[in-house]
Every structure is written in C-alpha cells, then in structure tokens.
Length: 71
Image (cartoon, rainbow, N blue to C red):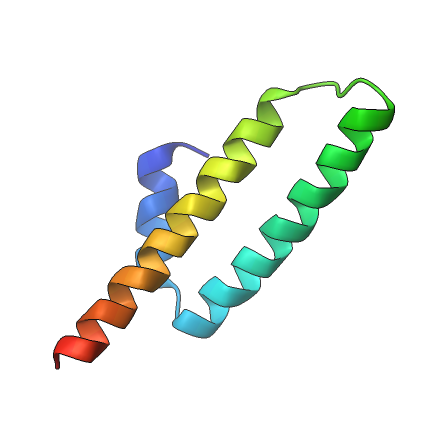
C-alpha cells in the first residue's frame, strides 16, 4: 500500500481501530524481527515498511490527542 493511501486510511479509522492496528503491526514486526534473526527473510524491506507504518499510526494517534486536548 502506498504512503498516501495508508495515511488516508488512517484518517478514516476510529481511535480504537488505530490502537488495534498498532497492536497488530507491532506484533507482526516482532515476529518478523525474530524470523530475520534466525533465517533470511524473503523481503527484508518489510521490516522498514512496518516500522514506518507504526510511526505513522503513532503520529495519527498523537495528533488526535493534541486535538482533543485543545478543545
């Protein structure tokens, strides 16, 4: 999924859904890291993409917290 598509998808999700997505991505990242340590990954770029997606989700959650605090 492209970056802009992912960002648009994040804006459309609720906070609870974002937290679930963050949890799922964090779990997947941990699994991929373990697999990468024990054996070669088919596509090691997945690690980078997952880390970046986690950062995007955290950014969206934080911006929503700031908006709520300013209301």
